[in-house]
Image (cartoon, rainbow, N blue to C red; front, side):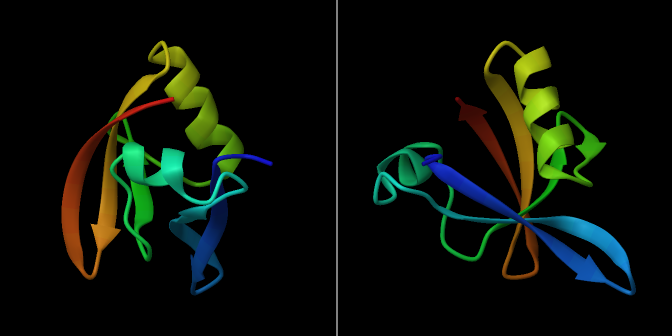
Amino acid sequence: GSPVQLQPRVSNNQITGLSVSPGGDGGQAFRAAGFQPGDVIVAVNGQRANSAEQALALVRQGGGQAAVTVDRGGRAVQLTVRF
């Protein structure tokens, strides 16, 4: 399985971000990327994250590294994530 699972977060019939949770490796890559349980990706490289496919495409454009903004308990937190 994937090291990080992404699930759309929906509000008022719109995707408002991607909930991030550890995948099949038991969370090692999840924690190494800087994520915490409950994080919701709201932007990748400054662009709103509306789908897992779009988020992954933005990461690939960045050469496997991305500036990711997550909603962590109502606070915007900037992460630099390498995949």
